[in-house]
Length: 87
Image (cartoon, rainbow, N blue to C red; front, side, top):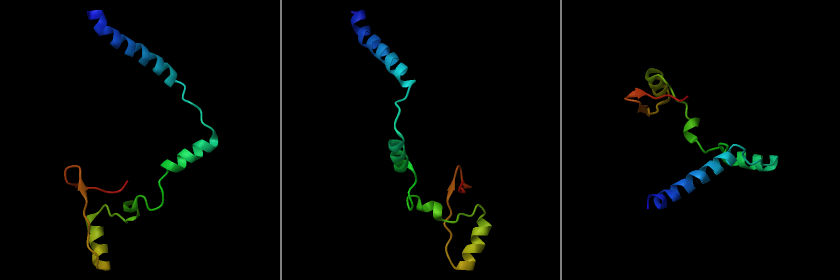
């Protein structure tokens, strides 16, 4: 009875070991396919519009600029209330 219950587990472990051995050598792709895949994951123009905004790490600087241009301030905070800034 115990052997019947353990058989599927042993089979999975053996299969996992065989798949892990194959994973050490990734499949090779040609240069054209690589370029195509890279184009799919590369950031596209207009995709991250928030990165086009001029972010001010200092609230004082943002306030001065907003007052000069007559625009509102958007304040974004994170990590316990500390002002967030772009990287």
